[in-house]
Every structure is written in C-alpha cells, then in structure tokens.
Image (cartoon, rainbow, N blue to C red; front, side):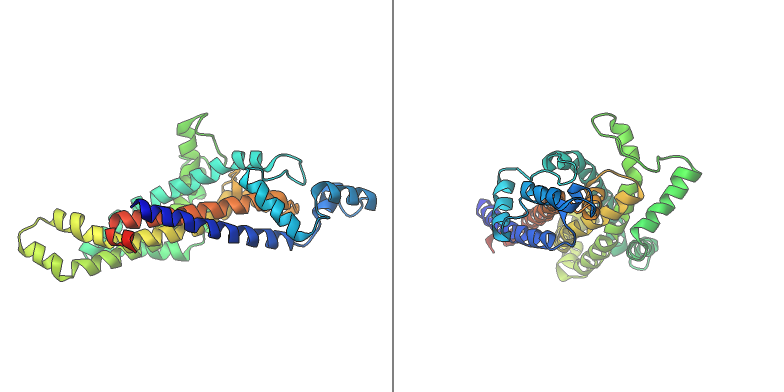
Length: 315
C-alpha cells in the first residue's frame, strides 16, 4: 500500500506543473491590461500605467514571469491583488472555507441520497425505489443548478420561512447557523451530484446481484444482508467511487453558480470578480487552488479504490 501511495504522490508533480503552465498561459492571454485597471482605467496617464506595469512585473518576458509564478507558488507566495494590493493568500484563506464547506457538505448529501436509493433500486428493479431513483437521476441531470436553487429558496425560505435564503456564517462563530445557511446550497449541489452516482450504483450493484457467486452464496444459506452488504456491494462500489471522484471538478464548477445564487462569499464569486477586474494574480491563485482540489480528489479516489479492490495496489 505504501508503494502504491508513493507512486500516486509522485504522479501528482507533473500534473501540477502542467496545470500551472496552462493556468499561467491562459491568464496571461486574457484580454485587457491589469496595469490599466490598477491605474484607474483608460483615462489614466501613460506614465502612471507604465509605473504600474513595472511594479506588477508585467514588463518582464513571459517565460521569466512563469518561473517567478512557479517559484513563488512553491513558497506559498501567490503575490498580491493587482486591484486592492491585498495578498492573494489572505483572500484565499478568507474564501476557501466557504467553498470547501459547500463542496464537502454537498458530497455528503449526494452520498446520503444516492447510496440508499441505488441499493434499494438494485434490489427491487421497477419497484417504487427504482422509480424514485430514476426521478432523482432525471431531475438532477435535467434541472439547472441555478433554477433548482431558486425553487428551493422560493419554497423553504420565502414560503415556509424555514431556512435562510442567502448569506454565510462561519462555523467558528455559530455552527448551527453555518449549517442552516449552507443546507439549501449544499442540497442544490448534492442533488446534482447524486444523479450520476445513483444511476452508476444501481447499474453496478444490479449487475453483481445477477452473477453466479451471489446465487451461490444465497443457495448456501447466507443472509441477504451479508450477501448484499459484505460481498456484492463491496464489489459494486469500485465504479461508484470512480464516478464520485470524477464529480469533483463538476462540483467545483457548479459551486460558482450556486455561490452566485445564494450570495456565498466563496472562490466562485471571487473568480468572477477577478475576471471582470482583470486581476490576474487573484485569478491565478483561485484557479490553481481549484486545480489542487481536483488533483487531491482524484488522489483520494485512487486510495479509496485501492482499499476496496486490493488488486489495484499491485498495478
């Protein structure tokens, strides 16, 4: 297992380097000039614009700026905002807990929805659970996140007045209010993520329940809980875990829209602000951190798959 983990960790290094290069090139090719934005717009004097270009290092060759970007990132220095002058690491530290809270709680709700529905649907094909799982999968894929979030706000916030519609409360300040403010956006995200996971788990478990080894165990007198929970479900979890890992970038992308709907001060809203203000330093920091989240999500998926299927450790 240690050798498997070491190989996977070493594989992360070229992935992050390539990702850093792509992020840097794309942000460098963005239209607009950060120096002009920092100087106050198109009406700024050429002297002031030139001064800001020198301060921001925009006059350096592109390759030199990239080496500075990688070197500073490795030391934890993401630079400062071109617009506000605030260190990017401080902006990320303020925004990251919001997005992480939303994504983690969304995955928890997705698993809580998909796991029982997928199991019940596989055990009772064409039954009531199968119909519910089909409805969840269909609505999760068909309904846009922003529309589903607005429907939840209209029902639970404006009509029933059970939950707050917008805003965010830190978990350190008030854990209960933190949970209440995140419940609707997390359920919006979890509903979308559970669609593919439910379908995958239903199909995979249903396939294993029809195999010979399951019929043999049932004929030998093993209980249904042991047959399904200990053997068939364990074998069927592999594709489901892979699907869950592939949902990490989907979740982060959906978080941008959901944060806008529920007015959450997370990485998504910060990314939008950075794009419109041409704040490339902040934009690079936000995108790089989201890439790190995706890479770590894939790494954890590999670990989970190795725990479920020991054969993977030797591959």
